[in-house]
Length: 589
Ligand SMILES: NC(=O)C1=CN([C@@H]2O[C@H](COP(=O)(O)OP(=O)(O)OC[C@H]3O[C@@H](n4cnc5c(N)ncnc54)[C@H](OP(=O)(O)O)[C@@H]3O)[C@@H](O)[C@H]2O)C=CC1
Ligand SMILES: O=C1O[C@H](COP(=O)(O)O)[C@@H](O)[C@H](O)[C@H]1O
Figure 1 (cartoon, rainbow, N blue to C red):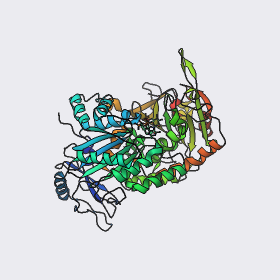
Figure 2: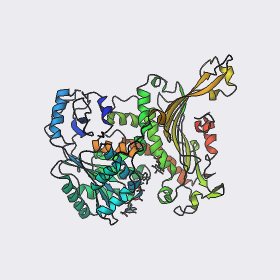
Figure 3: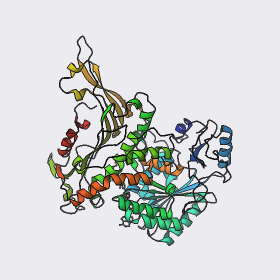
Figure 4: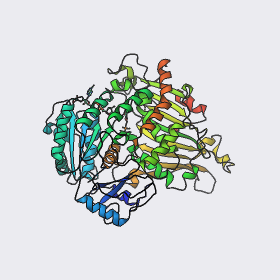
């Protein structure tokens, strides 16, 4: 069975002629499983990098990708233009002779994230035929390991998709053969130089593109970027760096990190990952809104009563208390994952689907947020709870958490966007660990029907009769819309039902993990789902004053039992804005 990267058909939808608004456009062609993609007769995907496509950052090289340097720019002198199918095919055949290689170096390869997410995602991409033909993967960390030991470690983490087991162990073998390990210190230019030599050796005489994934604690980000840029960046192709969160703890530390990174990297070499942006249902948010006439006209204060962004986990810190305690749930989940979803949800229609157009709109939302007030925030911390004879420890009983810690493991907040579309609409966020369930969802509660003819049928609880759109990000992905309908029969009794797009029923195929999408995007130079530095600044500007106030006043979190629905304060906060949390209703599917 020939596998092909399923990403290609979505590119085809954009059509062969790609319009670009910027004056300087570099072309990059990324191979997509060797299958026709962007046009019926081509095997390559055209990817135009808007604006500073050809960037001469300190760690970058002039050529964005594999196209011969003399490839004509399709856009001249600031006027929009398009690439014809013929030009496209010429470029594709040109590039076919000159395929670049890509190396992916997982820095911190011995760690939890690398094992849990990064290597499995790379294998899934390989299995799907999404990795470039010439690729190699390097693990880098201080731990001593041979290539064989790395392969053994990685092999234990690889799984086959439920729906794709054919040739799986063969594919695993092939994949593992392309994984190598280099042990070194994170602040040693010499060690990175050796790594660079190894990479070049495996890449052969082709244009060699280097991707580094920083899967390490943040205090060593800059050491690694410095050493990698000086000693292991590509001399012939691009060099890109994926940076994992946390991107600082507040505005100041985040700005310092950005300044540090920019000493060695240009902004468009930095891929700040927020894995929630790679989740299928978050990706679908814009499709839902902008490609369905029934939603976009309703997307404003005129019809939407409130929006809820809810994250819950049914487990506590469990050994990750060291990291968690100095960040807390607001920094861990709200300032990044939930705020990013909010920005995507609330943004104006972007000019196009280009990364910069989308990020421009998101940053406008973030910069329009009203300052977050302490009285609009509730914080909580889980305490021990015994259920069914099992005692679940409280947060401060975790050995990796300092005694008496006031770090919130739960927070709820009411946020507002100061713009014409959203003025007065509460955006309620709720995030917590050790709650009763693991779930992430977006809930949109619509206003009451004015002059509702059926008002009498709903009793006194009119809020229950309003429409609610639920986007279930995880688990059991789905989108459903609560509507009112008549119960069949001779009488006139009303009911609440769900118009339900249940992904498992509609799409039996396994949904790719967020890290797969994001890794592939980074390889292809697609920046849409990564955080730009001005977005990050705006996100910290919103949360930093609140975080400082909480810490300065040593606000004590409200305790809630492990496995419960969280502190009652969250209900009072919602009630203050006439909101009822949608995840607590009894009519879910
Ligand atoms: N784990 C997860 O689920 C998530 C993690 N992240 C972020 O991803 C990054 C990596 O996470 P994770 O894999 O859990 O991290 P780990 O703590 O497992 O660290 C990764 C590797 O870094 C090295 N390392 C650890 N501590 C230090 C230190 N103090 N000084 C130098 N090197 C050190 C170790 O490798 P060696 O000793 O071999 O050099 C370790 O294997 C972090 O920034 C984290 O915040 C983000 C979201 C989720
Ligand atoms: O970034 C983080 O996310 C995970 C939750 O991710 P999910 O994809 O499993 O929902 C969270 O557990 C962790 O604390 C946080 O750092």
